[in-house]
Structure formats: C-alpha cells, structure tokens
Image (cartoon, rainbow, N blue to C red; front, side):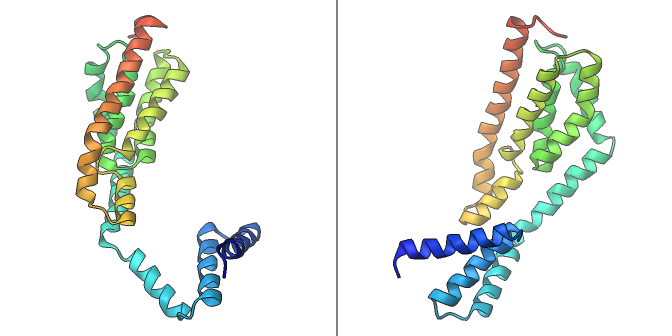
Length: 206
C-alpha cells in the first residue's frame, strides 16, 4: 500500500477520534490499533500490552512523582518563605532590587523540585505580594517570574530532561550535566537584563 494512502488512513482515524471528543492519548492508541489490524499480521492485544507495559514500567520515571511531591512540600511549608527572606538582603543591593529574588529563587527551587510549574507557583506565592507592596512595575514582576520559571526545564533535576532521556534512550546523568551551565547562564542573562533595565529605563529601583 502506498505511503499517501497510509497517511490518509491514519489522519482520518485520528481526526475522527479527536472530533468525537476522545482524549488525545486514546486517539493515538486507536490509530495504532487500526494500523496493526489493517496493515500487519501481528496480534494486536499481545503487542499493545507489551508496548504499553514496557513504556510505563520504567524505573527512571519513578523519580517524577517524587520531584513533584518535593515541590508541593516546599509550596505548602515555611521553607519557601525562609528562602525568600534569606535571598532578600543579598538581592536588594543589586540594580533592580528585589526583582532579582524572582530569578535567584526560581533557580534554586528549580534545582530542588525539577518542575517549572512548581517553581513559578512557589516563588510567585512569596514574591508577588512583596513586590507589589513595594510598587514594582507589574510587567516586570510577572515577566521575571514567568521567564525565570522556565529554568526548571534546564537546571537539574529537570522533569523534562528525565522524560526526554527516557524517550530517546539517552543518559539522564549526561543530560543533567549538560543542563547546568545553560541554566546558570540563562539565570545570569535574566538578572543582567533586569539590572540594565533598572539603570537605563526606569532608574535604579530598590
């Protein structure tokens, strides 16, 4: 059977399932079942069971819920507040003042929780009320938090790097080592931008 026809069949099944309101994962699974039933002689039940079990029983992926749990613990305890208060005396001396707490705090939390969402939620819970109280520009408060929240994608232990490593069968340790320098460089660039913005556009903010 020609490739254009195969593509048309799979796309037709996929769009039909999605249009019927079926979840994306189940729609992709349906495409695989149809493809195996129509175009191969392999037993669908055995093949799908082995494939699904093999992809979900990876011991490497067991670290993901633990990192998420760690982020939740930090979010709901005083540890995050203590870290915020500890960074404040150091960061407020820099051009841009307490805006740097968003970035430095996000970098540290990224190295603990491994999740960008948990990092942004935890740091934002502490920093946004304090920065608003000191009348920092709303755009810079949200901008620095949103930008620095992405550090969880790079700075190990990153959940995204774990998922990527398992998917492409790459060493998780090597991916973690490769993410350290880019993550720190990105945090430094964020802080440099805030400092330059403070000294040029808005004046020196404390």
